[in-house]
Length: 103
Image (tube, rainbow, N blue to C red; front, side, top):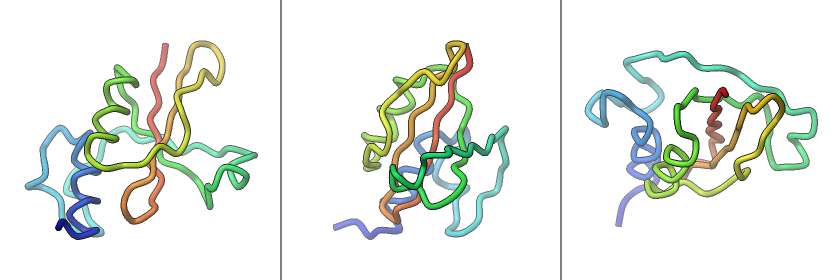
């Protein structure tokens, strides 16, 4: 049985351009363009603070990769205006990971 740590690494590396070998707990060895989003109704959705949104080219594929890696759906894909799409998942440690796709 995989540990929570193993499950979290699987979710974290689902979007990684460098793979799991570069991940250590509480530290990653690369930084990509990451946006922070504030949802004024986030607490009603179980969010406890700002959410980092990973910019992706195909939100459906990226979301499915995270779910396949063990993440749980937090918020389905939705258009937040102007064709910009967001979605979020929760990893094994209850961290919320957001995805954002620009039009």
